Length: 130
Image (tube, rainbow, N blue to C red; front, top):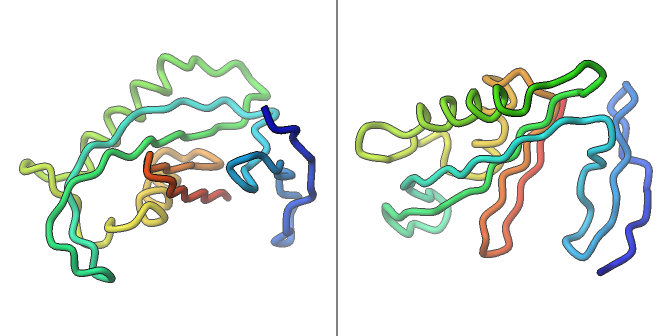
């Protein structure tokens, strides 16, 4: 296992959580946060690579501040409901949700959480936070 180093995060005017470096690169520090994870299986069109309609499975983790007790079961159920509503009846994401970053941004907004990680097993990850 790789040792983790604490580094300060770039600031945007308010105190951001520090990040840590691991074998996966720089990832958010989740100390003081409650996170839940669900899978999103959907199809999308990538307007950059012109690959046509194709499917992926994204691992989506949403984080909330845990200063008060957070019922992970309730949060997990809410995240599942939110992710199920993103694709249409044919399992296709809307054009604006073509990237992991866009999916993460949408979940951040709809879940009213403080951070979202969206990962594909092929080695792609997006992180957004407030």
